[in-house]
Image (cartoon, rainbow, N blue to C red; front, top):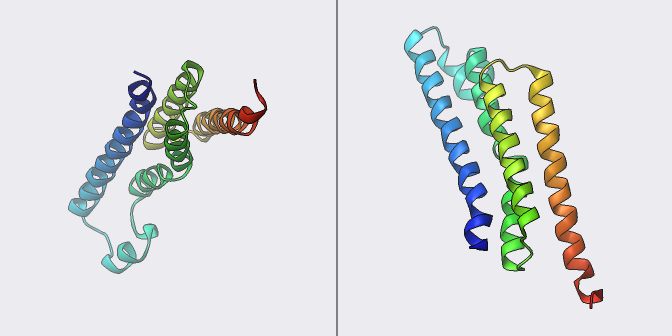
Length: 143
């Protein structure tokens, strides 16, 4: 049960990454079909794409920043048996913050809302890491 409860938020985060990838593919395909792209600029970097495509690309790239720390933490927590109901609540809060962040990123891209979701997720993830580190470091000292 705890393994499933621990991994379910990970599965949702992975699914979010694929949803953002498919969204990126769709907006890139639409931009290609619309024409006007200079192949050399598009191949070199994102600046050759229209803003909507760069926005989706940045959102996709962002799925490999903070979430990497989340994935590592979940693996370590499972391996050391340091998960709990509170850990699961925090994991879900992190994933929900990532969903909100991605949604804002690919829609309005309102920087205040996007930053709020990012900061909230970052703080939740930091709390998870601190909890995990303390559980590991203090375990020998506890009765």
